[in-house]
Length: 288
Image 1 (spheres, rainbow, N blue to C red):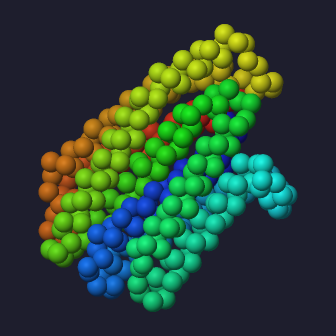
Image 2 (cartoon, rainbow, N blue to C red; image 1 turned 135 degrees about the vertical axis):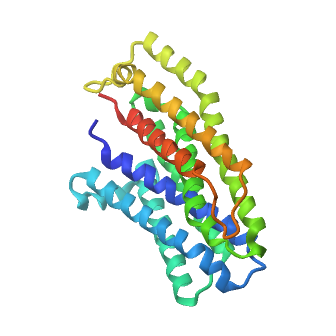
């Protein structure tokens, strides 16, 4: 598998988008709090989203082989989803960086501006899915791409929010926001897992039809690679479901007095879910 830069780019960028959306949601919940309190709660999340997006963008340049070729990729925005991905990736990271810089300078976070940043990330993820849908690689030419990518936005963004935002919700007046975030985060993970499970029969039926039509993408062998990684796919699904199950245990546990989760369910569930995301993306990019 030679697509490690793309694996890193897609996973980290989607995690950044998900974390930004969670931060925007919490910012709306805390709109009655003081600007200083919102800044205290959300600043680490915004900085982390910037770092994740920045590392992801750097990894995408590594995939180009010769980074200066990125300028050539910008010439066909009217017809190329790759060009649109580059444009929206740059736009998302730029507006996220500007929003974070503004917050650091004025010690204030604007919920509406943060939501606009998050929505630009949603468009970016759509462009990612369309790139692979438009290729000749048979295992990519299905709507499963969108379920996979937006699922990562939900799962990785929710996990990052639980680790970075929940511990900052310390005073009693913010306990309602902490409880809401736990329920929304766990709900987002469960939704993503169920959506992927429901998509699998249609995806496998699509691949079965392609076998009948004897599709060949020389020198790539995506169907052969897909079959060869059947064991890894099964393990990734098992790990993902186990991780989601452990994360659901958070709904039975109280959020501590200082905004921290008082048990190890989060760490265990998050570790399994991150591992499952890496394995699933490895399978996705293994096409020869």
